[in-house]
Amino acid sequence: MNTALQGRHAVVTGAARGIGAEIARTLAAEGARVSLIGRDRAALEKVQKALAGNGHAVAAADVSDEASVRAAFDALRAASGPISILVNNAGQAESAPFLKTSVDLWQRMLAVNLTGSFLCAQAALPDMLEAGWGRIVNIASTAGQKGYAYVSAYAAAKHGVIGLTRSLALEVARKGITVNAVCPGYTETDILRNSVANVVGKTGRSEADALAEFAAVNPQRRIVQPAEVADAVRWLCGEGAASMNGQSISVSGGEVTP
Image (cartoon, rainbow, N blue to C red; front, side):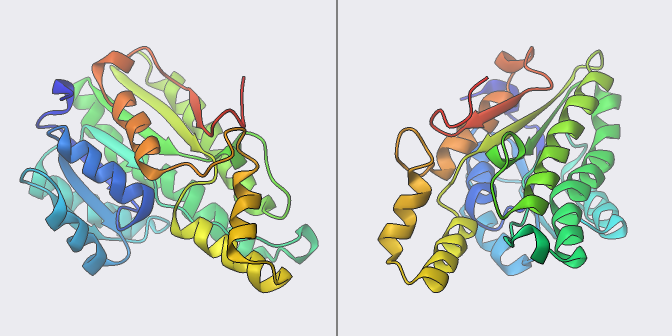
């Protein structure tokens, strides 16, 4: 067990399913008090009930809305104490050719993926500064490291998350706080399943063939599992990663290398 996490209050956004739920389970297993944020309270409560340990809380919130974020963090702070760890996992991915990318789609991708990370970091950071210790982990994407065709808005938002990570990391480097990004490749999540369904619907290919196309991007020829992403987050939240700051760690089987 990572003793550095025992008793610490960790907030995970987008925690109702997929990578976020797996991160919540991993941090709870390490002894953290985990607060779950998402839009679907019933789904959050289902994850909450399955977590190891006690003292876990939930809050329904729209991370792209400042008032909603503030209310959620105030409630979670009142329930579980000052926040030591923030994992900005909430995100959405939509695809469209560039000339068919509407302003609405563009704004949605920025709002959830980038503005949401900004607002949640602003809400959590004061507790970390007061304590002189903190961990912020932003879940970005390989799309924020290299880009992909037909997801320009999503890729731009995730590049922004990496820029935010690097800048904030420098600002708090001498405050006992680290800020890093984890960048998964194609991972077994609802986002990937929706992408596969989109390919099947547009091309008529089988689901297996569509999934194989996504897996082929990974040099290991496989889909990343949420537990692998969660384990990277767990490490970054511990004392052993105290010198990791401003980094963008690719969990992608070698798809992105320095």
